[in-house]
Length: 328
Image 1 (cartoon, rainbow, N blue to C red):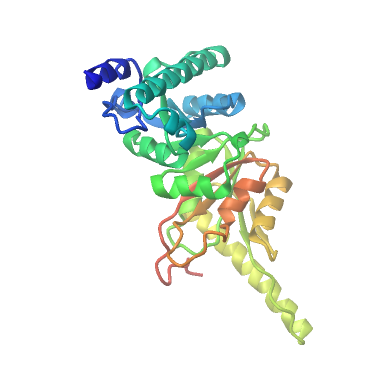
Image 2 (image 1 turned 180 degrees about the vertical axis):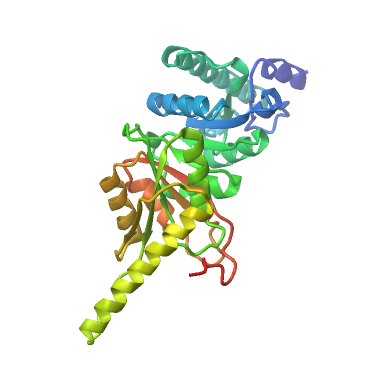
């Protein structure tokens, strides 16, 4: 009887994941309700906030990319204290259902209030659990081509890069638009397949925007032979610039705006270029963290996410094979 009552209550929700051991039936994920012929964009946010600007930007992207937009809100697991209070499995499941239904109603009301057209009810889902786990799971099930996150929910750069690498999907941290339709693509030119430039080029073509390429060359230690050093250094910079333009041509980027920076910090170089060019979106790549690398070591992509004032598109890049640098 207990199981039957729980099932009746849970069948009123969309996408409930029970946190207790009570067996709660899973509802169909968003993927089952989508039009398979169109691309899919997943907008994910915590249930505690209402990031209106980021949601509107996700809607605009879905329109420009001719994609279906789906919205996922994640509520955190109940605290240990709450779980102790809800030791009765049936009561705990009922509370979870009621909390999910409340969040679902609030989400629909929020979407209806801020969007020009309401999202279909089947495109809105609420789940309870760990934010990264739920977003990755939903993106995989949905077959999402893009994940959009709001910047004002305290998502660390490492959380954003973890979602991108685990879901193997680009993640856009959507900040307000600068009004300048330009994308900046940052590349280290170390992968002959140029995944970041290809992603930026594809994004730019579909949005009808221009692409600015940036590459940073760390400063070379000063040597006593000043004249020969500066001549060599200048030649090296021109060589990198030529390689950058060659890379742009290979991925069909119609851009002559290629910038080579010289800075000890690649993050500072990329952010400086973004400010100078007043770009709207910065595209950076991220690789899965290799075993033995400390979790306290931040990647360039994660630091860009945390420090940039522009929207940042983090695109997953597969592990670099040996000797994969672009030929000169």
